[in-house]
Structure formats: structure tokens, C-alpha cells
Length: 179
Image (cartoon, rainbow, N blue to C red; front, side, top):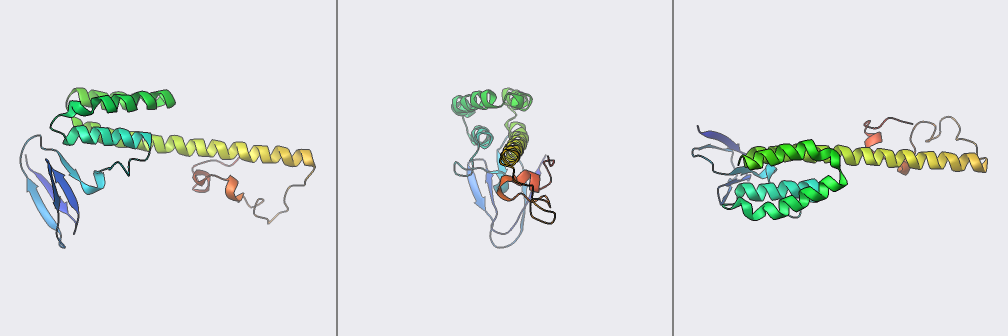
């Protein structure tokens, strides 16, 4: 079965061992062949853009997917997996799914599952930021109570819910509940 790919102007795609760059117009490609690695530019991570532990796992799986010898990247992959499981054991179900795809030699599905792992990592980091902001807010409240400082008057930034730098981005975006 053929794969239809539409490329935007100047978009790049990896097909096998080749990087193909589109010209200044949209292009449609019909790609036939079996088990040829194909990655669009938006799905490609580099060593520079793999700036979190889960993105580095994605990069390792990406290298397996595009390599003629995927086993060459297993040592790095399993080292990264051990590190993330030690830091965040709750990632195990997603990692197990990635591992199963790798064992079945379905590396594209493993790569897609890595996207879920990156999303989960983002949620964990957002939750950690929310928790840190909550602790900071509570510590500030305890200090105010000890020093006898009155809470801010109505209409001030803090009274309106804007606590400035102590409030994590996730809470400002509505992902964290106010305390």
C-alpha cells in the first residue's frame, strides 16, 4: 500500500537514509515500498531539541527507527529507560508499551508511543510546578501570619488571584486549582 505525503514549501522529510527538502511550492508524494523509515520534519528530534529525559528516549527510538542496525542504539535506550523509571515510576505503562513495540520490531509505533511519554512528562512537570507554587504560597501565608502582616486589601493583585512570580505557569493557564 502506498503512502501519500503532502509537503509544505521548504519542508523536509526523511525517507530511508535520505533527507528530502521540498522547493518553494507544495508537493505531493506517493511513496511505495515496505519497511522504509519515513519521518516528517515536525516529527524529527535532534540532540539539541531533545532537552528532556523523555525527549532523549524519543531520540533513541528515532535513531533505532532510521538505522539499518537498530540494536546499536539499544544500550543508550535502556540506560535512559532505567533513569526515567527511577525518577518517575508512574511512566512504566507507557514505557512497557514502547518496549513491546520495539520487541515486535514495530519501531514507528514505538516512536508514536514516545509522543505519549513526552506528553505525560509534560503533565508531571506541570504538576510539580503547581505543587511547588502551592508550597511557596503556603510558606508565604505562614510567614505573614507569624509577622502579623494583614492580608492585601480587596482590589490588589494578590486579592484578585494574581500572586505574580510565585504562581506557576500551569496554574495561570488554568491547569492548577487555586489553593
